Amino acid sequence: MADEAYENPKLAALYDPLDPDRGDLDVYADVAAELKAQDVLDVGCGTGTFALLLAGRGLEVTGVDPAAASLDVARAKPGSERVRWLHGDATALPAMRVDLATMTANVAQAIADPQVWEDSLRGIHAALRPGGHLVFETRDPARRAWEEWNRAATHRTVTVEGIGDVETWLDVTGVALPLVSFRRTVILTATGETLTSDSTLRFRERDEVTASLTAHGYVLDEIRDAPDRPGMEMVFLARRP
Image (tube, rainbow, N blue to C red; front, side, top):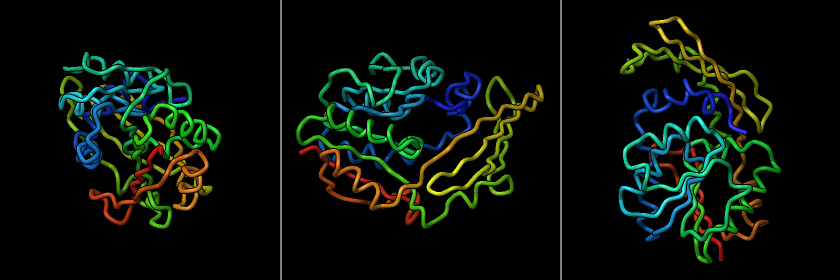
């Protein structure tokens, strides 16, 4: 189930304007090129930024997401007809064979339920061609990134076309490792409307991720550093034999 940050139409429409710098996607685009992928499954595609980037480079792309509001934003973007959009998640994918599956940004950590995580890995494995790869990132728990998720560190004001100034910030609401919960507050200055969404991420240790991949038939080829946040995240490259 998608949380309110992605399912609420007002918040989904603000997702891209409030986070316009998606340089973090470069590592995934580079991996797709490195692996010479032609067919890509973007799990948790959200508003479609990465799926559309790859489709614009001539790849066949399927984007799947449980948040209908985010998919509505994706489908309204130029070039959206190049992507196959699916409302759902990786636990119940239609039959397909892809060269590469990706979970960018927070997607892997947002699958907080252990059973859903296992079912997602199983579903992605079935969607990969033999020799196909799964690539995703997760924050290193040892770096305790959540300690900077507070208003003082995250507050900012962004001017959004057609809406005006929008204030936003994060506050941690609970830490019970490996789970960390937080609330995003968004204020539309022109109207005074306040929108909030609650999210929970699972901070998996390296060994936990490795064990779950192995249990579902993947071969772990490599763990890389995330170039946009060096030392903070692990990027896993796993393969279906």
